[in-house]
Image (cartoon, rainbow, N blue to C red):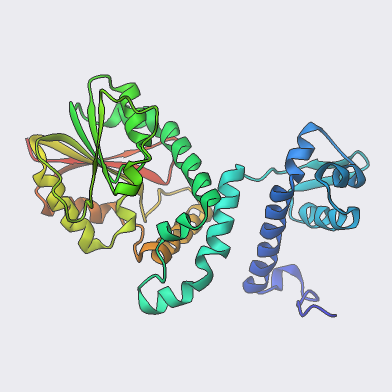
Length: 329
């Protein structure tokens, strides 16, 4: 069988769609390497193809073919010393999670783009895949820990905090570790609240089950956290949430937002724009939501009376920022 790839052209003349197809093949081969344990097996040092096949329990001819592709795309090196890792993939959880998102969750993305209504929401899809959900849990907990020092240093003083959509309490736990004075209420859906992290201090963290889009958010909060919440919602929902969150604040209270900014900082290159585009389309597929511009978020906060705002970059995650807003003093 002849493969219809126009490889007779010079590489510089190959159309971008063909390069995308080749890149997809390299990506899929890398995922196969991760799933088969190729990169883990090579952590101990170089191995021949036969030794690698024995270690991972693979057919030598199939392993050789996979190694050839991974060498072509720069993941592996194969020389007289054997097969070694040249450019290891990212963390296993992240690589497998995004592969499942792109090739399973996006499977019917054409329907969502046509209709504006996801056939099944992201969290429904996750509930059907416990292993994928567990990977995401570990990723989110790790990200919260990575950002915790910068976030705790940037947030204004607060005794009472409402963590809206706080999920399993990752950011709440990290904040409590760094701010001994805070007391936090985590507000989220019942199925999420029941899985609050076991290391959440019971004397300082309470939970409240409900729908933050419709249920009362309480009152007198010094600080309301909206961390990784807004990208799941359309602009009109964000604006209404801001109005309701603003009414729940004490007179000197603030809202703090953690999210991605649709306008990434200059100098990060096309990979940053590409990731934001991928993330944005994933949000559309899962929620009919998307990544918002921080300039828009600040304007919507202003409509809710929180006109004093500042943006805090986060060194550990250049694509994310803190946006902290309060009433004029």
